[in-house]
Length: 295
Image (tube, rainbow, N blue to C red; front, top):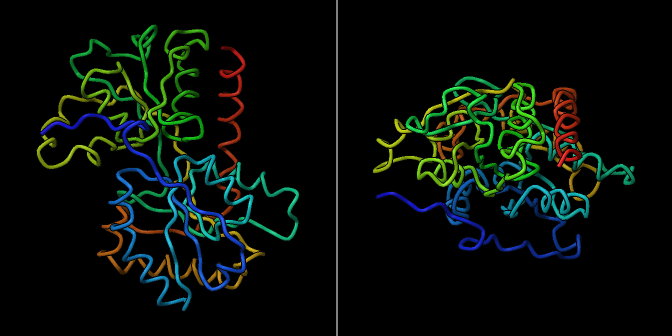
């Protein structure tokens, strides 16, 4: 049965409560922005939380945030110890800690998917849309995820600009942000928008079971340059020390031998991440800043 795209008016992510840091001295708060229903997120992450808690002898709890901006704010305020961030959100979070010299945000690992540790943004369209080239997108409507989403906005917008779509084009003027990748896939499938920006292979992730046969109705129009997959980063200097961050890196890497947990997380494994890998994102940001200034 076909599903209607979920919007922020129908699904809400409860805001994590703030508390005195002393309350959490024996726990590690792990932040994520949900890519699906938050009930499913809690269920699918529980095996990971149990595994890490058992190995560290510290309880891990999952905290979901409506968007990356909210999660970056929690990192800045010291309300998270561990965060699964988008590449841009990692840079934003790092910048937000500039005046907190005793705290450092360290990328510890990045996920692997389909044997790769980097990814690109894809612009998807319906096969019957009449859109066959990037030039055909001029004047059309395009759905994005949110302004801090790497694959769901930044890579896509920068790529379209490099391909010749003007910052003044109605495609950019009529941008719509749907908050989740699944919403973008469904919105394009059901013809709500002419095109949508998603991560590679998103239709296969979000169109399953009874909807799987509908993937054939969509196609990838164009693909951006690749960047490293999103980092899982540890906030060191407060409730988490560097030795524990290194231990967390080791534990995530050891998950490569736990396909049961990896399947729940929808990843193929983990690789070590380093800060320098994400510098290329800054170039993309500068391009998109031009877009922001042009409308």
